[in-house]
Length: 230
Ligand code: ADP
Ligand code: ADP
Image (cartoon, rainbow, N blue to C red; front, side):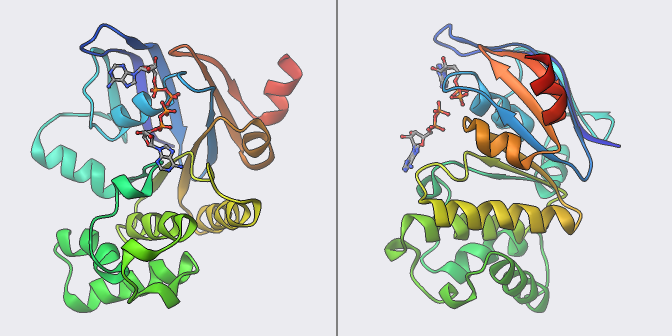
């Protein structure tokens, strides 16, 4: 069962930079997948295509087997089922309090007040930050902001959770908590795509690795498969 797949995606930025040179990947349901590549490989660019914040120069994207259309209702469906946690929490967080931040998604989905409260409660519990519910976001630590940004995406109850370098700039303890959270979410049936340049993190955690370099996929398989190819 494949949630999201890309076929021969190319991306050239307006300044002429070619960031993707023919990316074909398939994200299988219920898996823990790591997209691994060095800085500049094109990982963030690919993610922006996966949630349709960028439109491919050429190639296409299939969401649950159907070609993605760039109209309002298809995009709303995609974004309610595919959640992206950005690398920099400050670019994602905007509400004054944690509760307001985490409520934003479910309110937008049109859920009732009671349902919103339940989603917020559950997301904060899962993320291990129920005690932060009434704190102002502005004064939280970087690690706490990171957890708030994850909780706010979880409140949408996505089938596929994508995280761009979620442990970058975190101390080992906070990084481990995030990796444990990703395992818990996967055990609950969520598909998780972790984007990282950290080789150990990827190989130690993922069911499947996608290697990316210079806008191309250079390998894909289980950690064992990939290691035996080298
Ligand atoms: P990664 O996330 O793997 O570090 P990126 O997708 O951020 O890689 O970048 C891939 C390439 O595209 C790099 O050469 C980067 O400089 C370039 N790039 C990224 N964003 C833009 C942009 N908005 N305009 C022009 N070039 C960009
Ligand atoms: P790339 O994927 O090309 O390496 P990044 O995703 O690292 O680009 O950076 C995206 C944006 O997030 C940049 O504007 C960068 O300054 C910012 N950023 C990256 N890491 C952090 C961090 N730890 N704290 C705050 N901002 C960050």
